[in-house]
Image (tube, rainbow, N blue to C red; front, side):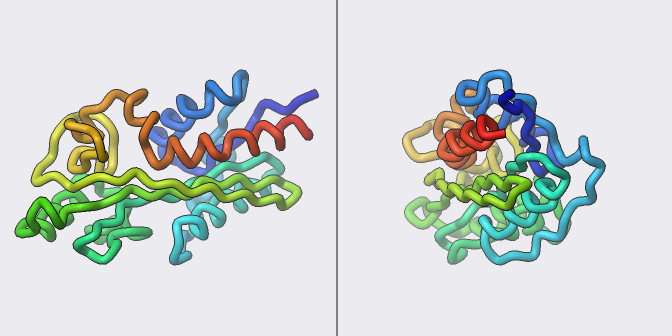
Length: 202
């Protein structure tokens, strides 16, 4: 019988909801668990790459005997030499303080003109099986940083980022619109066939 359960290595409810929407068309009938369902502590993400941090999280969860998915993502700003990068979630010094992170980034770019406000979101999506198979898929969403916050949706840096080809911030897009172009959407759609294969083999 084909397995239908996979687990996402995150305690972030926003990410679980977003990933469920992204994967549903590719993996119908899938049950998506989260790290919270396994009562696991948050692992220390001390790698210097997005893929490395994602693998830390997925390996911890795969050790529980389940196919594990994880991602690590962040914003890379041209004028800051690619920062915040892997430090995006704790850019202001406190992990997960989205508002403080956005305000610091806006302050750092206050005098930077339009032509130098290029940025991109980057995501590494990974799958790790209990047997030790590891797959990594990476993708970008290029765009620009705005001068202030726009929109109420999304999370993280969405209110201050406008994707290439858009006239609204990520926070002004519907979840469906954002998923269609987002770095996470692209990376997990690349990963979906590998997940389907791994589930079918169980």
